[in-house]
Amino acid sequence: MTAADHRAATRTTLTDVATLAGVTPGTASKALNGRGKLRPETRQRVLDAARRLDFRPNQLAQSLISGRTWTVGLITTDGIGRFATPVLLGAEDALGTGEISVLLCDTRGDAIREQHYLRTLAARRIDGIIVTGRRTDPRPPLAGSTDVPTVYAFAPSTDPDGINVVSDDRQGTQLAIGHLTGLGRRNIAHVTGPAHHAAATDRAAHTTHWLAAAGLPLATGRVQHGEWSEAWGRQAVRGVLATAPDTDAIFCGNDQIARGVTDALRESGRRVPDDIAVVGYDNWDTMALASRPPLTSVDMNLTEIGRLAALKLLEAIDGRPDPGTHRTPCRLVVRDST
Image (cartoon, rainbow, N blue to C red; front, side, top):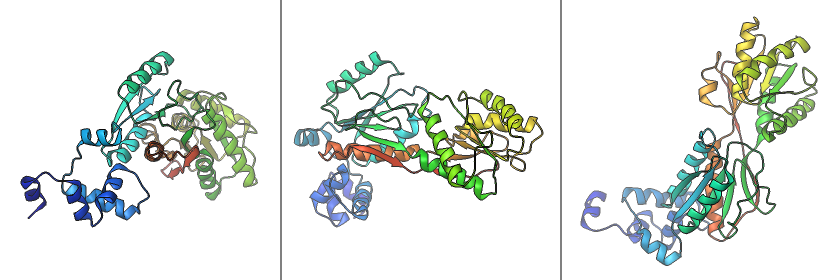
C-alpha cells in the first residue's frame, strides 16, 4: 500500500509516523514538537516520515493535553522588514517542524502599540515571544510579559537574565579585515554610520582591533562616522582621499555606505578594486548587487539568527531556558569589489 493509499484508508496517526521512522510514539512526539534531546538524524527521520504520510496533528487535542496553544508571537520594530523578514523566515523554518504558528506584530517603534500587541498576544495565550528590530542597540525588556518565555533576536535585551541571539560582529569584522589584508591591502580606511548606533561603534572598535592585530593603523587615523546612506559614502570618500591618498581599501559599516563609496571612487578616477578595494556589511542584495562593481559584503546570517532564536524559545517553553547572549557566525560573500 502506498502512502497515498494509506492516507485514504484511515487518518494518519502519530503511531503511523513512529512506525515508519522506526522509533517509539514518544520519540516521534518529541521530534515533531521540537522537544527533548534527540540525535539530529533521529529528529530528521521523524520529520521525513511525517511529510511522507502527510501527518497533521490535532491542534485542539494537543492544546488540551499540554496546556499550550502552539502559537508564538514575533514582535518587531522593523516596519520595512529589511532585518525582521529574514529573522521571521528563519524562525518559521524552525517552528514549522512542530506545527507552531507565528503571529507577526509590527510595533513601528511605538511603545503604546507594543503594549497593545502584548495584551492581544496574552489574550491568545501564546506560548512564547520572539522580539526583533531594525537596530542592534540593546532595548529594554518587554513590559508585563515576565510570565511568557521571550527571546530577543538581532536586537538584544538589557535584561541580564534575558535570552539574546545576535550576530557576531566581532567575527564578521575579522572576516572583512582578514580578507583585505590577505589581498595585500595595507592602508585600510573605515567609513561607517552614526557614533550613537551600537552597530557603528561596535564594528568600528572591532575594525581598529583587527587592524592593530595585523600591525596596521587606520589609513586616515580615525573612523569616519556619518549616516547610514549612499550620500555619506560619497561624501566620506573625499575626506579619505584628501587625508590618506595612499588608501588601498575601504571597509564600510553597511552596504548603502559602500555603494556610495564605489560611486565616488569611480567619479574620482580610482578603479575598484584595482586601486582601492571596497567591502560592505549586511549583504543586502538590493545594494550589493546593484553596486558597480558588485560588493563584497559581510552577511550577518539573519535567517540563522531567527532559527536559533526559535530553538532557544522552544527550550524556554519546555522549561529549559538558556539565558545569556548567543552569537551566530557571519560569512563573507566575495564579489567584484575586492
